[in-house]
Image (cartoon, rainbow over all chains, first blue to last red):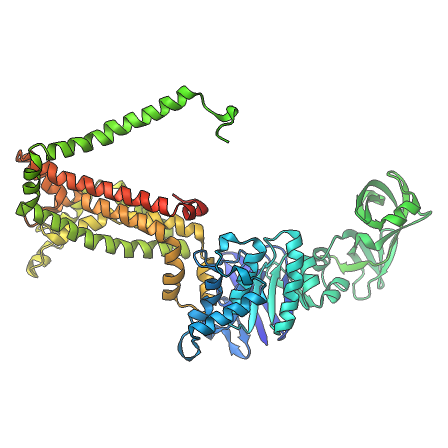
Length: 343
Length: 281
């Protein structure tokens, strides 16, 4: 169990973390999701003991992390650019954490060789033990970094933008592989990402961060379906932002109305995802300014009343059936509208 | 690539450039070196050997080796700690420290020698106290060592700072999370990563330590057989019209420069792949 309470950290005038509290359940794969500068990497580094908080506390399994040195935390850290020891072979990189052990835990050479062999099998790099980091591809380096971190049998695995430097296909494969590894080994893992798709696909729990604060914590589905703040809504995918007016628990959003039970009367903001907009025959809500075919879908760039621009994404079949042309006036229906109090 | 006509210079340009470079080298490097050797051997190998075997000359060689043997390790330790601190940590006054490291490069060596005289000399700030405790610094070996250390201290640090800055602190942090302590990290991660830069720094530092004239000249007192280093001894012999002796000692110093250069080139050649991979030197 990792208990983070009221953590704060400043770099000069910049608040990297601002009163962050969070609880991480053992066995979970947790994503820290946010734009750059949101404090997610700082939080990860504080968990690893590479940075120190100005205020607040971190408890690792009931122990105050402030009293634990980095080396005593049993935390595996995978760096964004892997940070492999460039002058060591793959096997020596993986063995490093075992070689520096002291006292009764210190394994002998045969044990080290055996563990390294097992770890290289695990990360599917069996034949590459003698290679040097610069002779490996990005995905291979990533897996060496992971094997190296796992060698010390960490209680907690931390990954900083683990797939950031990889190309799309490798990234996809590694994601699935990491998910399996996490489940098979029964690890508790926290990874940092700015890619919402990655967070939603990989994590059991997503922590959305912005400007040093936690915006929302929840399962991927929960976060996507019930975003707590406008920031979360916009960060988790494309969104059309529209002005709204709330009156008695109902919001008027352009041509539509939506439930807004807990919002005070007055101006508000509403968000609609492009794929939650359907084109309906015979209405007059918008003009199609531009259409782009994106594989199986078509994106419509629209202008609503009062020159408000919006996007809708519909599938190719509907597009063909409706016979839409640029310049057409169309009717729109919004399947889901999220309304928030005006900021 | 280089055979592509569009980016190939005309033949006469290439020939002219190479010839100019060679002529320059010949005039300013090879010719003086040859002159040194020629003068040293003018009266035959016997007088050359006798000149080198003179007791004062041997004393000068011993002193030079001793000074280098102290100054170089001291500067390796200083250079490593300074560059480690500058490249791996953020602290107030970092820019100031970097400028201070460059100071010996920008100050005339004679001035640095004079500063030691002003500090430690009989009329200096600490002079009376030193005299009272019977400690001799100026006009003695400690002064020569101090002046040499001062003049040579940028070499190792200057070589290492850019290298360490470029490498960042990721690998050290990785070692830390894997359970390594500070010394272990220094020994197993930091040092192996900078070993070539460190070696160049040591070679350059050593060459300068053995060849330093100005600063050492001011603090040495030129006591033959006691406080004369090789460069100072060359001057004394030359002023006494002992040309064979002067050039014989000079030839040893020149040899040192050649060995240093040779060692550097050999290292670069042996490790050319690794150097090409890291794009340095």
